[in-house]
Length: 578
Figure 1 (cartoon, one colour):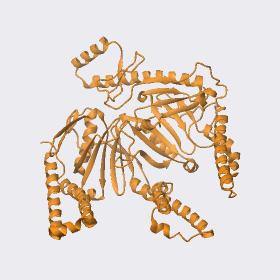
Figure 2 (figure 1 turned 135 degrees about the horizontal axis):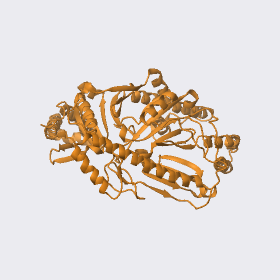
Figure 3 (figure 1 turned 180 degrees about the vertical axis):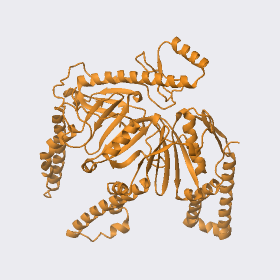
Figure 4 (figure 1 turned 30 degrees about the vertical axis):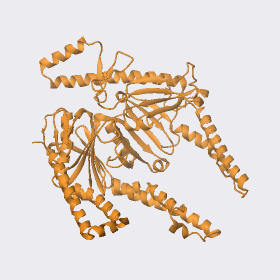
């Protein structure tokens, strides 16, 4: 018999839907329809409508519960649902990236949970089971991981898992996460109230003028900052309360949340990019954040989607150790862009300052109010420093198995990408980069951040260096895929009978060329220049591997590439030359 939803899901779903419908009914009755109800029976009619609504909701939810079935097989998750029309779905387990469990306070009291099955390439949840018991939700999470490893359905019990806790957010670290967080929704509400859109609020300031008006403006700004800070603290504490990160076999598991509790999984073999992120304040006190991205989505983008930050805040040493536990990339030695890039950055800042100064001067000229248009010119002194810092915090490094890039000063991101996860290597040049003989090499993956252009990238490298880097990444990708294919083939050989091994070996030997599988439904032809589609091209939502460039055949100048240590005393790793 196929598993069913929890019986408690019936009253919970009915109450959740009934609340909104009841509010709509009450609003309709008291907004003009009450006169009609008085003519037809008054309060008795209202009571009858409410009873009818409750019976209809409960009846629908009972039918939904009885007709909803799901089953985990060795190859797929099968779901059959629908009250008036049936819908049968079969989701291949190889496509499942994340299995996330979420519970709000009421659901925890009822011991029920929502289970989300996320697949690659989609912006929405592939399948959501609402609601099962929490024990059943954990069983589904464990069983999916086991079945994807090739184990028999139902093999092993929860107590047999070897779970290792990698990180637990302490109370002090949670307090720091809150203190360093800001939420802009509160200030938005205050600005809306102060804009005059609400007559009651705007009327309070109708008679205020002169110094009191200026003082009120300063008070409003301070209030906005305070509300933003307090709201950020509340959101951060609610999101990351009780955060833990553990490792069970070949996947990471995290738990977090105060009002809504999240319990998610991150398969290690689906990791696309590992990102270490910091800012000047974090670097000053030796802290950083860690984000792990899979092909399905970056968990934590909102709603029920878990937590993209695998570690919201910890010391740099702990973050780097955890990052290396996920992807052992070592200690990068970053190569920075050419020194002349600093002049380019300085010119960009000067142009921006000139535009702001011109705008201020235009305000002063048109309004004739003595506006201090010269204020932006004070920043001229910091332009060289800003250009140097922007250059200093950029670089790339090619390791044995990973490419690592670093970009940003105010929000510095160090991205680690395994070679076999590269989808496309793109060499691009803007018109401004053409003038400086520069280019950018983007390492595109199947991760969710690639959808918003937040891939790993070697920015503003020399033109000739960009061409060499593109070719080198392509070669390392092919070599990494070949090594991974051989390892997977050896592991498969150990699991197969002898006669199956012989047939597999003959099939591989008779093929036109070696084909590597990247574990995500994508086959790559290692002998050709193009990647080939697998039998299930959308199995992981991944793009086609290849290289792209937009460059001139003009030699660059590597003589200015800087090779030295991090002079700002932050970050990790040293810098090495070409």
